Amino acid sequence: MPTRRCLLRLLPPLGMAALARPARSAGPEWTLATEYPATTMPGEGIAHFAAAATRLADGLLQVRAAFDAPDGLRSAAILRAVADGTVVAGDAFTGALAAEAAIFQLSALPFLTGSTADTARLLAAARPAYVEALGARGLTLLYATPWPATGLWSRKPVLAPDALQGLRIRTYDTAGTAVLQAAGAAPRQISFADALPLLRNGELDAVLSSGDGGAGARLWEILPHFTAIDYASPLSLAFCNTAALAALPPAVQNAVAEAGRDTEKRQFQAIASRAGDNLTRMQANGVTLAAAPVLRAALAQAAAPVLTAWEAEAGAQGAMILKAYRAG
Image (cartoon, rainbow, N blue to C red; front, side):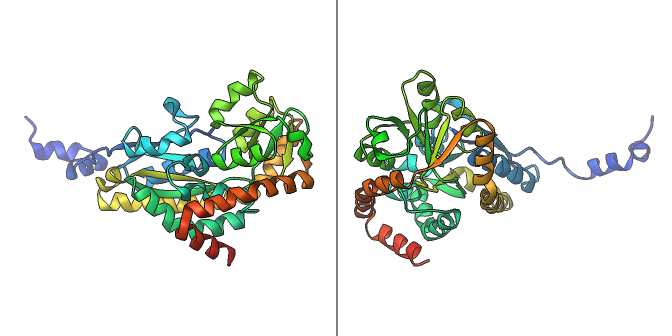
C-alpha cells in the first residue's frame, strides 16, 4: 500500500498547497437593496459597492445588489428594514426618509442645490449629521449617491404657472408636495415604483423626477415632455445594519469602509456627464425638452415657506449646516 509520503509526491503543486493550508470558509452574504432600476445612479452605485466589497473582503463577505424594490421595499421603508435586519443594507432616496429625521429632507429641499458641486458641498457640511441620525437607528453610513437635477415630466407641455392648476403630479417627498400644492397643482407623494402603474392607468398627469437612467426610459413611454426647472440635485444614502457590520472581522469591516469610499468617489465622477447623457437619450427617444424660467420662478416663490419651515424644524444643527454650505 502506498505510504502518505508517496501519495503527497504524486500530487501537483496546487494540491500540495491546498493540503498545506485550511480552506477559507465562505463569509456571510449581504443584500444591498434599492427601489430604483439597475441603470439609475443608485442602481449603479449598489452594483459597484457590491462588487468592490466582495472583492476587497477576499471571500469573507459576499454582497448582492438587489434592484427595483425587492420584496416591495421602497425608500421610505428601507431604513427600518435594515435596522430590524430584514435586509442587511439598503439605498434610499433621502427625501423619502424625511419623516424619520429633518436632516434627511435636506438634500431634496427645493432650489437649495443647483449643481453637483452644490450637492457635494452640502454633503460635506451635512455628513456628520447623517452619520449621527443613522447611528441613532442602529445604522452605519456606507456612501452617498448624487442624483441629476429634478425636473418635471408631463403628458402635455408645462411651461407656465397656470399649467400647474389641478395638475395631478407625483412628488417624492413632503417638501415637493407642499411646493406643488401651494403652486396650484394636485400633488401625490408616491414612490417611483408605485407611480408607474398609476401613470399607465391615467391617474397621474406628471411626475417630479430626474428621470435618470432606466427610470427615464420608463417615464418617456408615457410622458413625452420634460421641463428643466432645476428643482433640486438631491442624494440617496446607502447604509448597513451596524450590528451586522460589527460582527465582521476587523479586516472585513475595513474592506466595507473602503468599498464605500470607492463607490462614493465613483458616483460623483459619474454624475459629471450624467445629465447631458440623460438629455441626449431623452431627445433620441422623442422627449420634448424645454426650459421654463417663469415656471421655475413661481415654484421658487412657493418653496420659500417650505425652506423656512425646515429650518425651524432642524433647529441649531440645520442652521449650522446651511451656514457652512452657504459659506462655500
